[in-house]
Amino acid sequence: MKISIGLYGTNAHQIALALIQGFNKHYSVFRQTSREAKQRFENADWLAVHRAVSERIRFYDERVNETVERLKQEFDAAHIDDGTWQQVKLLYIGLLLNHKQPELAETFFNSVTTKIFDRTYYHNDFIFVRPAISTEYIEGEETPCYRSYYAHQDGLKGAIREIVLDFGWQRAFADLDRDVQAIYEAVARHLGDLPQREVNFQIQVLSSAFYRNKGAYIIGKAINGQQEYPFAVPVLHDAEGKLYLDTILLDPWRISILFSLSRAYFMVDMEVPSGYVQFLRSIMPGKPRSEIYTMLGLGKQGKTMFYRDMIYHLHHSEDNFIIAPGIPGLVMLVFTLPSFPYVFKIIKDVFGSSKNMDRATVKKKYMLVKQVDRVGRLADTLEFSNVAFPRNRFDPALLEELQRLAPSSLEMDGDELIIKHLYIERRMEPLNLHLEKMERNGDLAGMEHAIREYGDAIRELAQANIFPGDMLWKNFGITRYGRVVFYDYDEIEYMTDTNFRAIPPAPDFETEMSGEIWYPVGPHDVFPEEFATFLLASPVIRKIFLKHHKDLLTPGFWQKAQEKIRAGHVEDFFPYPESLRFCRQTSPPQDTP
Image 1 (tube, helix red, strand yellow):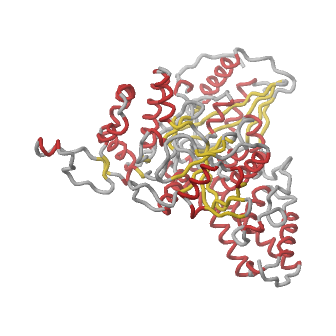
Image 2 (tube, rainbow, N blue to C red):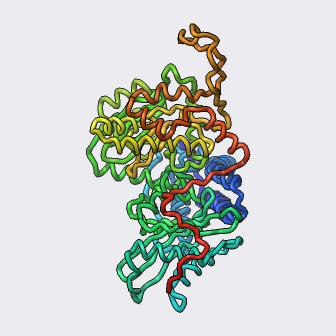
């Protein structure tokens, strides 16, 4: 960037072509693995489902690094003059005018060029600080983003049946007529009664199913007059390997939970991703576009949208970043902006004495969380590098803590504070503070719900091959929907890498009372009996925990979970209550369309 070599427009054009070719290759690979989700679902190849989710994470960085290397080898990218780079951006915009994924291509341009530029070039002359191409009204050439259905001679039931069959799954349904009837009745119950159909009545359904874990989801909305009714229908395999409709979700907030960042990303075959995002926003208006892109597997675009939202929020707010409430961690320094519903986490330079790990290990643990099925119990994070914040928006106490505990992650640049590496995640109330509040207010029902959720979170993570490691209450948060989620990952391990043991009997009374350990302990050994010592000091908490989760204090629970994982069993995890699932009757009551 310092030496001008006077490249001409022809070279600028070739550079722009190399950049768009790099993106097109990425999206082709991304879309292919998403398209193959249908076949994995049809084959009930659940282990392949998990492998594909993990492998897809790395696709983007591989293509970015590949394109950076090409620009360096073919164009000596580090020494291209400023005027040529500006010309490259303009030519690149021209290549996006009829592109089906322009917003993703702009983000790819940023990802490549920011590995070549230094920070002084991070403005709209050289990168896409703001989007240049509108994503409104882009039409797919292969398939439309959504299909429209009408209730003609076969009525609403006929339309529901047609919707399901149009996905073309190469597996028979156990009893589609039964399931269509169950859908019809559930809709009627939800609405009190089916309203009269207006002349504009139609059902719009996104063309690709949404695949995750062992399910496929049909997502759409019905339009009747001025009303819109969103819905999501999970399609599952029964014990005989046939398909069935498990339920229908009709509340927007329940559909929103499907797209929670505490769950694995969906596999969706999208020619025009912005069309899918726009449709999903119409049924989940409270869900940020950044989170929708992320849940569609487009994490880099999610980060781009999030960063733009954050900068916009900073311009329209006055509060300061402060140290996050709760017990300080031994590995992470956590701060927040009260008016913005996220927390920011920085790896400390020196960890607490009980933490035997380094920075690289912590980063590896956070990456692991992105690659597994989070089953609604692990908070997803956005990872950023070299983020510029306005220095005057930091509370003095926070600034002092940052300079004391993480100076290697900081850089002062005039009025800006540059944080070289950080994680950002949705803010939750720490579970320890929530329980203290419940106990202080005498809310035993609230305490019981939270403790039961806490144990369920640990149980479900174990079934998904995740051992949290540090299970202190402070490392869990409670969401606005009352769900307990784990968010401290520095000691997280795969269940299959952990050795759960019972404490052997002491050889004599004196040894037992000495306080010294009388048995050998390996680096991966865990003794579940010890959990009670640091979790159940409060008599109230102890009583509730033992009522619901006593088995978590025995090695037997953990060893049985390991056996099932090693046998290749993949557990069912439903992002909706058991009470909403249809009861599969052999002869459901009939009704007219």
